[in-house]
Structures are given as structure tokens and as C-alpha cells.
Amino acid sequence: MILNQWSGAGAAFSIRLLDTNYSGNCLKVRRSSDNTEQDIGFSSGSIDVASLESFCSATDGFVSKWYDQSGNANDLAMATQGTQPKIVTSGITHTNGTNPTVTFTSTKRLGLTSDLSGNQPWTVASVWSYESGYEIQPLTYNSDSGGSCIITYGAPGGYYLYVASNTKYSQYNGTLPNYATSVFIAYTGYQTAVINGSALTPFAGNQNNSSGDFQSMGGNTGTRGHTGTIQELIFWSSDLGADAFLIDDNLNAYFLAH
Image (cartoon, rainbow, N blue to C red; front, side, top):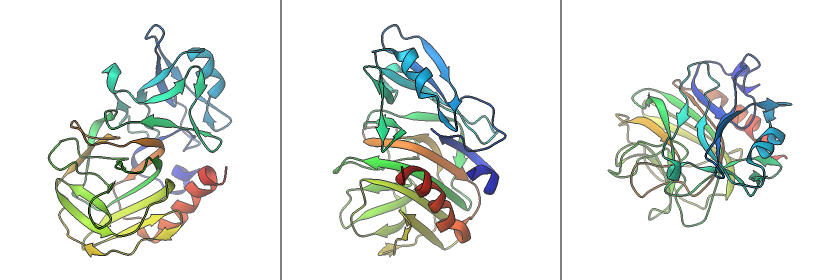
């Protein structure tokens, strides 16, 4: 499993089991019929869809907590019901391909228990989809001062890799796939970005200012946020650039190949 092969993650979230040593749950879900919450575990290496749909039973299900599989208990959570992302509609689990997924809109997000420092080398692997015309924010700086995030789409000239408020690391021109695996690495002086097995070529930027902390998944406290789905996000506070393609291959084989 990916965390057994690349250890030392600061936080790790997925609809699949990431570590053979992890024995906790996947998500805590709130059903809309009576606002009862229940932990949902894993079955055969993926979220237990049968238990999830049995619990929600013809109603909607929202994620109130996404458990950290890194061992650091740095969970993602959201107590405000109207801000919780969705995973079940009318008893049916959301999917991308054949795999379950969590669905976000620009007003939905989950906050980390503890901030993740951007003021160091870091590597982020994530699996997401997005709706054209909206931003992609798998991991964000939790403020409205510029909507800082690892990746955002729709700005003039291309899409951008961010780490702190209004401070871009690199600008990449082109069009993103609507459904993708991605690995981003930021370290002193330069960056690496791999999406669906291909490296992106920077157009401009390469600024090195990593003063911000990452605080939430799916958006910030303002109006900017992710509109689409997220299936996995892993953060390492280290430079794994030498293995960027191997990490992306791992994500790609599980998610895009099914």
C-alpha cells in the first residue's frame, strides 16, 4: 500500500485503505433524515459501501469527518452541517469510475485538526475531478486573502500552483483533465508537478515563498473553493520528487484504471 511504500506522511485521507497497519475508520457520515452520525470503515481495502448505504438508506449522506490514516490523528472535520461535503444522494454512493468519492461545491470544505506547514519541502498526492470553470482546491490555505491553494484553475493564462496567500510557485499553461491523479512537490528553488503521469512544464513563476500553512480540504472560508470530487489526498513534509511518477502511477492504477 502507498503509505507502506512511502512512509512519513503528515496526513493521509482516502476512500481506500492506505496502510496495512491502519485499523481505524474511513469516514464519519451524517445522514440527512435525522442528522445521526456514524463511522464507516473499510471492506476489502475500500470504504464499506454496503454499510454506508445501509446507514443512509434512501436519504443523503454528508461527511462530517475524514479520518487521517497517517497515524498522526490529523483528521479533517466540519461541524457546520451546511458546509459538509456530500457522499450519498438518495441512498446511492457518489462515484468516479467504480470508486466512491466525496463531492464538494465552492461552499463545502473540511478543516484539518492541525495545520500543515508550507514553509518546508512538501509533497502532495491527490485524486480529484472538477467542473469546468471552477477552481481545483484539494488542499488550501484557510483564508479569503487570495484563495491560496495547491492548485487553482481559471486564472488568466493557465493554471497555478500556490503555497501561500497570493504567492504562486509556478504557472502552467494548458487545459487540465476533468478527472486526474496529481503529485505536486515544492522545495527550495523549484517545483515538480505531475498530472495523470505527465510532467507539467512551468510557463512562469518559480517563486520561492512558502510562508503559508495548509488548513483545509476543498476551499477556504470565503467564496473560493473546489467544485468537483476528491477521493484521496496525502501530504508528506519532504521532497519525494525522485518518486513523483511512481507515486502518480500508484494513484493512477487504483483510481483511473477502474
